[in-house]
Length: 366
Image (cartoon, rainbow, N blue to C red; front, side, top):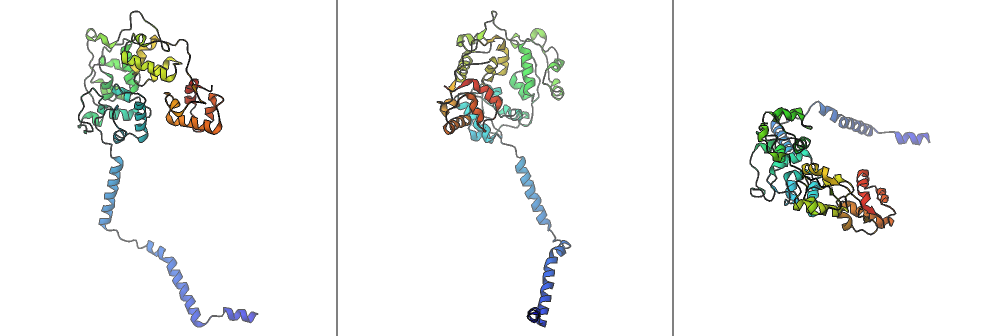
């Protein structure tokens, strides 16, 4: 047995030489990567310049700003809104708002769209042209103006400047509302330094606009800056009043009175006065002006039956999106009838407690 094993492991001279050569070749193959580390390949100047050019082109693509042009938010298509730099989701939100009867009556209304940041609104506000305004040919690129590259500064009277002009100067929404509310309550800017009282106006913004403020003499300040309420105040019951009662309030005309009643019908009735401010076509300045004269009387909300309502029925409610309506109906079809409005909280896709508490009073199961 030992002799057979010895004969099996015995190599001839040729075999020994071949084995040795094999080991040498394997060693060289394993050491090649280490040897190449000491001899890096030379890069030609052309290769490096090409790389730099490609990198610069990529960086330019990443930082390229959207093309801006004059547009009417009531008629612009989703494709045009995305061309202005808005996301596909935001463009769909705007289209859905219009499809439900919503309308932008002044540029500030566009800033109320859910999901639109204040920075985006400031960027687009100078290019908004509503139906009745003089507008260049649609999709015509806007000329190079200070508003296209940043806030526009100009001489203004804080007692007469409009909401749109305040936004053009680049002031934040909080400061714009504070200035308008101050005037509505009868406040008068007698000197530029009075702007320091305004809540929401940062030291940086104040320093930027203060030199452009020019206050008229008190006797020359238009009395219209502080609209008068009716001499005999009439409380408006927000759930029972018709158009004639609504029109007694300042800032509420025929069209706005009709919109308020339509919004009340879509909701199924108001459960708080603050819900009036949620109507997108009502400027916040008008709501604050009429707020003292709004009254919530007997509340009897019209409820949506969760066990019989269709997707369209649910989607018609201002608080319920189409996606939420589809989820509510799908859950009912999979799990059976709802026993109470609280059951919709069982859906993992609907976890917004603030939304649930807001919409629940309008839901029923009978």
